[in-house]
Length: 230
Image (cartoon, rainbow, N blue to C red; front, side, top):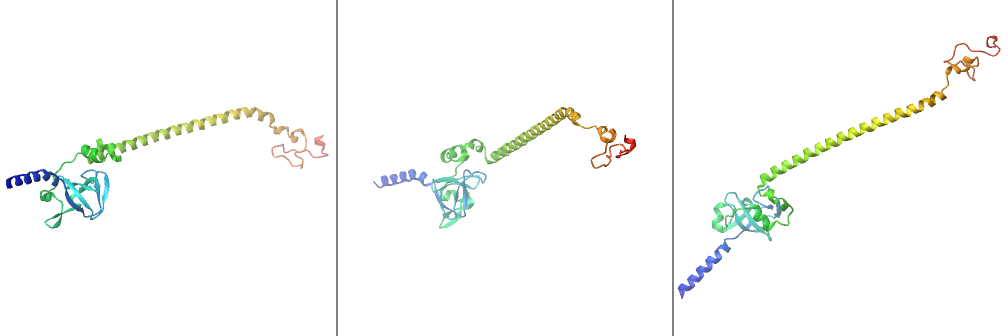
């Protein structure tokens, strides 16, 4: 009977062991961003206040980043901002404490992780680009931004060039219109202009009503009673 109880207890421990190893309790040591992946280049999904409790779901073996749960949300925090209680003292979470603390070593995949936790986030739309890693994502984004700027400058240059041509055509059209109007007015002015040879000086009359010589006329001015004007 005693052996049966021992076997049942051992079986129960084997069943519960994976569940126990799924998480460890930790505490944030600063106001730290919880991110969508194990890098500061991934989008931030929440801010964990200093001293807040978190559940450590697993950590990467190659870099000191851990998958944590905070008030029902999931994300990644650097181990240098997370402490856990080990032998009655708090230690920063690192590879040497994973096994004693019962923290499993996990891997990260954008596709699986984002499918589970970030479907309602704006950055989820670019999941395929992020799946190649943040360095590739930002490099591609720089190329896209550069292409956009080049295209914008090119289009703007074309627009300015077209505007300049249109403005030149409009000025040229206005100049041609002025020439045509001038040609229309010229016969009218010929008909109305007064020939200075028709002035009184050349007809033997007075220079003007004030009896002053017209500078355009002949120096000879007839005076009243002058026999030469008869």
